[in-house]
Length: 403
Image (tube, rainbow, N blue to C red; front, side, top):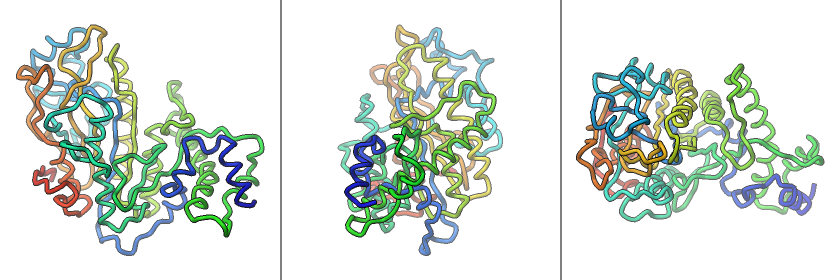
């Protein structure tokens, strides 16, 4: 198939929804990642898996201060009774939807960092996520903190891979960017037979490597979708509530993490994987909806942690902000500030880290952070990626110790 015909097919058929050709510089197929080997990878190098919870997860109903009278007083109808929470100690417990993480905590494998935030917090989803992904609270720049790491690690896109629909800003560097492996459900035109897709995957001498790689990704999408179907069938058998991915949306978290696990077990030299789960902007009827979302986080995350138990893999979970202490009139919560992070994996000693923020000594109704998120990032850069955190984080000196 000639280059012009192929490009016209990709552009007009709907296969390139989301501008995939424009992403050709960073779009890779699953086979590219599975076969990626790096002779310069340090012996014993760890792998980072970053889980982004989009929408601002309510930290107070995730790591629950059930013994604090201010918790129930500020959230009538939204709180959990002490008998409902999965207790961590005499003051804190996990949301009932986090049974798997509660088990990991009991096995001393889950670190919970409380009160995480940054100075002069911003309650805008976009601005706050920019801050978290660039790690530059004062003035978010145009490079992500892991993109800057990639710049210093040689710049091969396959070192930092996202299974989200588009490359998140956190993987964009000044001179390089990570790779995105397209996923989700496909709606292919009738003419897209296996033979046509195989022709699309071929190379043409008069096109750039980026365009050729983008075209190959669409053939690879079929293989990725088949894998997703296998994962969904295995993980959701008998579960009538299981959803399916749609075009333009990220695959379910269990599918994303299954793809990550497959790459790691295949020996891929990738150092960073980015996955995500959205839907946490719950301004109304929050309690049951959040618990359901946390269950969608918990089951695949705990399963992934068990699958990676004997490997050098560390998983970090964060959201752009927490929610207000006081519930609103719609049995939901509005945009807030500090929240909790989860860290699990190789070399991580379970427990609670960071001081819990006060529920009564507030800043305009919001929690005052006790841990700067850059402390967590710096620890990850040092201990997981073996990098100079100061160079990546503009000289930041804060650290935590999870070991």
